[in-house]
Amino acid sequence: MSRDNVVEFRFLAEPTDVNFGGKVHGGMVMKWIDQASYACAAKWSKRYSVTVSANGIRFIRPILVGQLVTVTAQIVHTGKTSMHIYVVVRAGDPKADSIVITNRCFITFMAVDETGFSVKVPKYVPVNKEDKLLEEVAMHAKDFAKKLDVDFEEKLGWK
Ligand SMILES: CC(C)(COP(=O)(O)OP(=O)(O)OC[C@H]1O[C@@H](n2cnc3c(N)ncnc32)[C@H](O)[C@@H]1OP(=O)(O)O)[C@@H](O)C(=O)NCCC(=O)NCCS
Image (cartoon, rainbow, N blue to C red):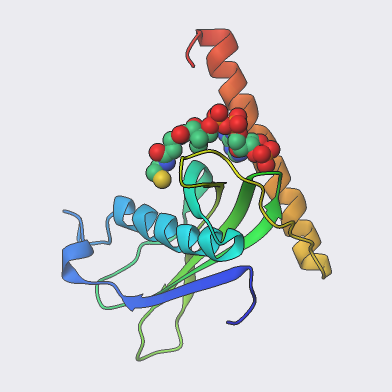
């Protein structure tokens, strides 16, 4: 894929990725999501970027050892300093046409300068109908995540 807002990782699920149940560890999938999203955020902003939050991570189907895994991360919304990324993970036997969506989530990164101070990012403008809808959903996810932050602070007194 050559679109500026998209990064794709492709690799095989290895025996070292597996948990006690014989399936790929959920934490390993989260690491792949974080890495692909970091690459996507750094490519978009041309800056070092840090993870702000991960929202709505869904484990839809298990991933098995030896399956070909594709992690696609795409910028779907930007704020002043934040980049909101939709990530979809697909996996399947490379010997067969059986690729399925295994995970999806939104993850937010913030671009920072050499001193760790936030910096402005280029604005993402959706072009087609699907991109516009994805941006809408990403904005809902951001609003929900921020509301959670407020709830923790106001209802429980936790910062
Ligand atoms: C990320 C961090 C710098 C943000 O600091 P902060 O003071 O809470 O951030 P702000 O409130 O200024 O918000 C920064 C941006 O994130 C957005 N944001 C804040 N909370 C958010 C949430 N829960 N979900 C999505 N976006 C959020 C804001 O809208 C803002 O974006 P904008 O400039 O485009 O409007 C700080 O929380 C931090 O250092 N966290 C640790 C990061 C880390 O260690 N990541 C893992 C390793 S890279």
